[in-house]
Image 1: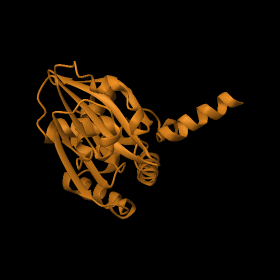
Image 2 (image 1 turned 180 degrees about the vertical axis):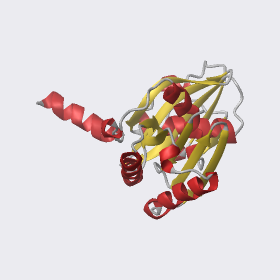
Image 3 (image 1 turned 60 degrees about the horizontal axis):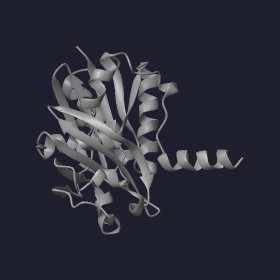
Image 4 (image 1 turned 180 degrees about the horizontal axis):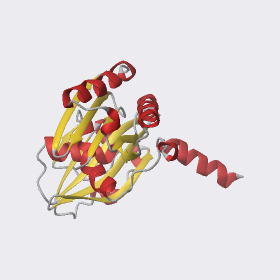
Length: 234
């Protein structure tokens, strides 16, 4: 039996969830700029509801990014404090991949569907990824990336793709600047929820992929790309 605490603060939503065996307890709230005030009370509420202490968890899984710079920093700081205090390993996961799993659960996505999660990255850019859902399995086809809307990889939207395709997240607000195939459906307002982290984290934690918290880092794709460019110039 695996007990996991999951935390997501990567978007304007704030959520936490606990997995106890096969039972999931969760709290989710749209609370832009209130993550600091809400996330720890959410965790404490769920632990009390479960009648458990943090030290009884086996690991903490969290969305490391991409997403809101401030939200990611807040979530990572909370995870660091909790993990160090309870001596728990952690598992960073992609917020875009978490959103894809949220879509599968909440939108009842059918098999053989391409899922394109997108976040508005500000500064005239978007975060995006590409997944394919088939036979209950989500396959990643393209890594998380940040780029202007005009630069979205056309392979995401090949008009020859016969399968259904959905786009989720507020990055689709830039759709008029994308030369792409029209998706079968969109949901701009959908945000990732912590309980969907378990779909990613459970198999990885069971495989021993959780890491010490001092080895974990938040994911800022824009910073990573900037660093690479500077390194090349040097």
